[in-house]
Amino acid sequence: MVKPVFAIVGRPNVGKSTIFNRIVGERVSIVEDKPGITRDRIYHSAEWLNQDFFVIDTGGIDMGDEPLIEKMRHQAELAIDEADVICFVVNGREGITAADEEIAQLLHRSKKPVILAVNKMDDPSLHEKLYEFYSLGLGEPHPVSGSHGRGFGDMLDAAKEYFPADKPPEYDDETIRLSLIGRPNVGKSSLVNAILGEERVIVSDIPGTTRDAVDTAFKKDEQDYVVIDTAGMRKRGKVYESTEKYSVLRALKAIERSNVVLVLIDGEEGIIEQDKKIAGYAHEAGRAVVIVVNKWDAVEKDDKTMREFENKIRDEFAYLDYAPVVFLSAKTKKRVQHLLPVVNQVSESHNLRVPTNVLNDVIVDAVTMNPTPTSAGGRRLRINYTTQVSVAPPTFILFVNDPDLLHFSYRRYLENRIRDAFGFAGTPIHILARKKRD
Image (cartoon, rainbow, N blue to C red; front, side):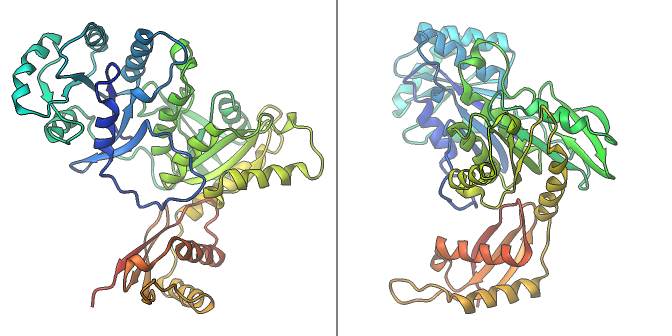
């Protein structure tokens, strides 16, 4: 299911980032904070009244050395292109400025739903200034205070009215939904073509749910696949050329619709920070992951090169230590035949369910080999029972005497023991602690 996109736009110093932080600040992820993930904080998931959506803070988009007015225009254009609903933030204390009017004109032409948020309305006596903002022609102004969190309920209620209705699942559970993510020019399209160009592959194009997307369905060795559209990871043109970071949103959309994600790395250029940012979203979304090193044909190598490159991947992507690595060349098609068997393996792991009695035997053995930790006050963690509550990703609940006693290091130890026993190649594992009820 694709989450709606709520983009926050406006001129500098009107409080866009404060509003962004306020909207996403209450969300608590079940994914533990593992070292090595580099987050790009201008994108985040949020939830309002059981509706999940993406929030974008366009104030965090860097436009290089362009003049301020050009930066604002480009940021608004980016939001218009990607968003389902736009939040236009103005400063209620300062009133309407020429920059506000210019952005409003862009929003008018977009025909997108716009929520007008009049920020810094901390004092109710300021509300009489709201009336001047009707002149922007963007509907009812919503008074908010980003610093105090006031007015957000009404604003988000109004936004939710414009979010697209949920659609039923596009594909059956047996179809592997596959997306390729990575920075521009890493070879995503070439790899898709290489996969589809293999013999005995039946291919058809079908409309996707993302804007202007066409997914590609194919079958190989009796397994159905769908390549989720990622061709639009970055549009051509000045705006997208000057904001590499914005391609992350397109990766997020692809990840949401996938159950297996191929994270592509340029073997010739090596690993850069952007690779870690994009890969981190696949991990946090709980998708099965395969790391694909493309352009391996262009790398000067000896018998140690592949092992050294993989070691570097393990160092840089510490949080993806469960993900298999495949080296290939989309251009020459060398080693491409190894990719789909790995995809099948990680998809199976992603949906693997472990018998409860066998799982508890593994946990008991793990505790026997390495006893549970004790707190500073001398209280020891006691694990009474363990059960798997879901798949995709595999999620386990430990019923314990006190969830606070489950330290990150011991959680990691238990994860490793579960992996040793059952495999789970290519998929994250979520381990949650719940207090046992007497």
